[in-house]
Image 1 (cartoon, rainbow, N blue to C red):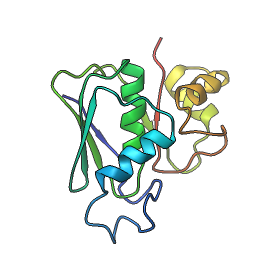
Image 2: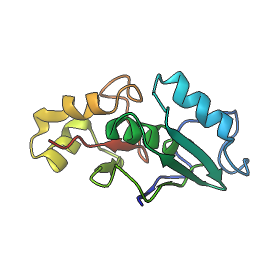
Image 3: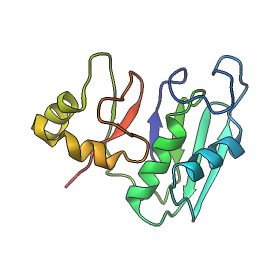
Length: 145
């Protein structure tokens, strides 16, 4: 089982209110976000329990499951994403963006070379649309090779 923490008050507002106003993020809103991003969540079951999202099942690829974890975790109102015991994302590496971070700085810190920032950008598409559009509290995938 994997558990990833997210900043509950940061992230995309899916239904017009912030984390403080919502009791919990509706599962339908998360499913729509996944669909709108063009991610393939077939084989996955998504359940919301308060500010925790549980992602169970087997995705088409471990990479796709990691992207679904990020898509639902980087939503305002979500503090934690938990995966099932049969998790295929045990080797996933995530980085929480802090004030002043750039993809280059994150690449240097996590991959050892600032010039490898395009790898992080590509690993986080379609959630990222531009390398300069990251924000504090956002969680990013760090590709492992």
